Length: 186
Length: 117
Image (cartoon, rainbow over all chains, first blue to last red; front, side, top):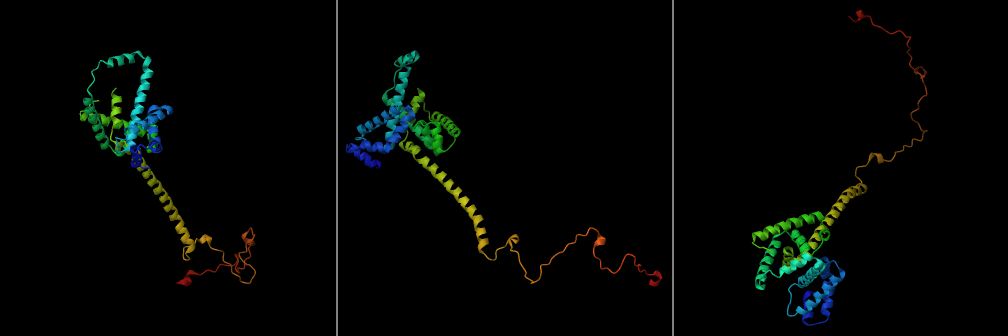
């Protein structure tokens, strides 16, 4: 089933929308979640939450790229869950408590300011990625967007692990130089 | 904090870049590998043909050069008893049959030099 038909199911509020989405993109979403969470149970929970969010947001949304739309939801949910788990683990750490208490004293920037800053940085990262050769770009995105392991990238792209590591090292350095040149601070 | 923020920003990159990293390059890479595999196979087949075709032509064409070691033995029927080299088992030269009429005791004919003048 192609994406237009899938989106038509959501817009028609058909119950088969989620089942068909799971058939087509279940494995894709699960692979993103498991890479980040390293837990089968947590990953499945995130994938189910992804379907729920897709159901709640379509309509009114009609994503141009449904695959990337679902992937982004899964990635955000998984990263949030990962951060939450890490916070819980550090619960008994006195220094972590002190840091979190002091965080409240730091004046936060406004949402508009944050969004503007975010759009600048995301635009710069997009330009940077498009300036890379295809192989370097994919290695970078597989590592930092899909959270693939070095071994998984090497297997997927049929290259040695040391080559993947050196490509990532070079690309990270290039990104730093690019962001500095563009006057972007994170 | 900074790496986390950077990771969040990377999470919002262009949809096409995300999808390309999941689909496009892997297929491109695979296509390249497939091409290399087929080229290797083609080279092996070509090498085999280079060996097999001349051998096949050699066997099928009548005027093709023939290996002399492969020639069949020719036979000549003369209607006579087989003959050939008959060796002797003599151990001394004097034992050999000798039909020379001259012997070592015969006088050697000489010529007087004055007769030549």
